[in-house]
Length: 132
Image 1 (tube, rainbow, N blue to C red):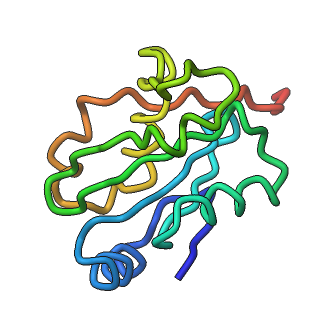
Image 2 (image 1 turned 30 degrees about the vertical axis):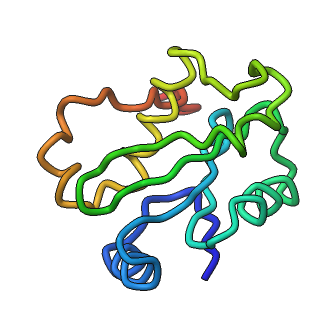
């Protein structure tokens, strides 16, 4: 089951993904556009799903997420293909902060993240076009 989302995962989707993959999922995220693909066993398929949606390779990062503990594991094998990173696929701290903020946004329904909700900053909103 492959999900590509720009909105938060519902509790039902999280439960479905968690039972299929024993509570640990692989995902890729476009840190610039805020799009995530998750739920497949093959990280390359997740990355390709974002590439089909016209995401740029330098904005795509792969990670694993333990749905029970909330631990995030960055995937050097996937991130090594990112042209802006070094050969080991290490992600700079300023990009990690953005990625982790997005992960907390998408997986807000997890019990482990519900307790940490106030620790992570909200994403900045776009200015409204309301002239009133």
